Amino acid sequence: MPTKKSTPDFLLVVLTLLLLAIGMIMVYSASAAWATYKFDGDSFFFAKRQLLFAGLGVIAMFFIMNIDYWTWRTWSKVVLIICFILLVLVLIPGVGLVRGGARSWIGVGAFSIQPSEFMKLAMIAFLAKYLSENQKKITSLRQGLLPSLALVFFAFGMIMLQPDLGTGTVMVGTCMVMIFVAGGRISHFVGLGLIGVAGFVGLILSAPYRIKRITSFLDPWQDPLGSGFQIIQSLYAIGPGGLLGLGLGKSRQKFFYLPEPQTDFIFAILAEELGFIGGSLVILLFALLLWRGVRIALGAPDLFGSFLAIGIISMIAIQVIINIGVVIGLMPVTGITLPFLSYGGSSLTLMLMAVGVLLNISRYARY
Image (cartoon, rainbow, N blue to C red; front, side):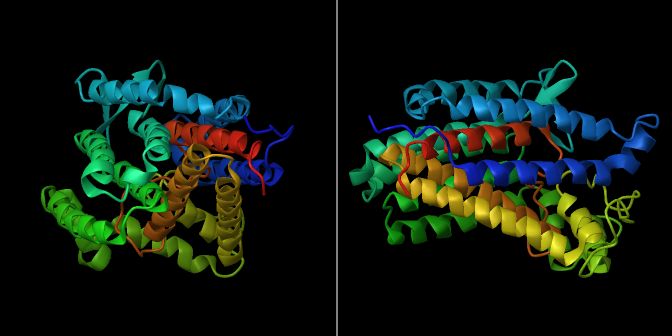
């Protein structure tokens, strides 16, 4: 067993807490007007709930940081089965809650959880175990690649029954990065990529609202009050922000122009209030966090630790790239949150738990 260091990666802790603090400030700033209108003058409604989940998430992060990451290897199958059971339960009317046209939540008292979010981490842990035990087989399409992909796409299919294309895309993308790092052949990825593009087009064509998202992405002005409304309002927020922004709390678009700006489009409000410099600072913090994650993965004492760290950092990177890409108009709207910043209990808690696992790996890493 490798020697355990007394402290985890300090810079990773600082970066995570900085992003979390910025997120808390921006959730309040972005949601105050909407919360005041919707919840009888309680401008802190969303901020209080986000603070609660942030507190629980930080506690979970520090708790998990002290659990040896080998534990996830032992229990990965059990955790994955539990997540599959939750994905089944969420589809049952009366158990699963419908929001925004997707049955993705299970109500727990006054709160709710999103099982698909936790499936991402469960799949990363299980796939890290599989790849560490079968790395030599991963170059074989039949013996190594297809068995791992079968499980990944089965989980993707379960998530698509809700439907939640955004979360499913992040999970599949993360798993593909892990398989590639494990030694998957480029020729296999090219073939799978072609099949994936065809499948993705099929998923888009099967749902009219997804077709509208694509057409609004190509030209949002075709339907400025419908499918193109969100991206237009997002660009209206980012444009006036300029270099220094309008000032913290002084966004105009949060006043009922940009729908629910505290969630997927929080970066647009941040750019409007803090400008290009504020937005660039947040991107820099994410870049530093990803750099620390990659260093931890490279310095992990075993393959399981390396694959687990790569999976976690890839999940964060993919979500950041897609979210900001959507907000600035480079990608179609997907409904993916910005890690640590967007309002959302399940997403925030999951991300902080994942960082906790990464911090434990850092206590064994050599770099």
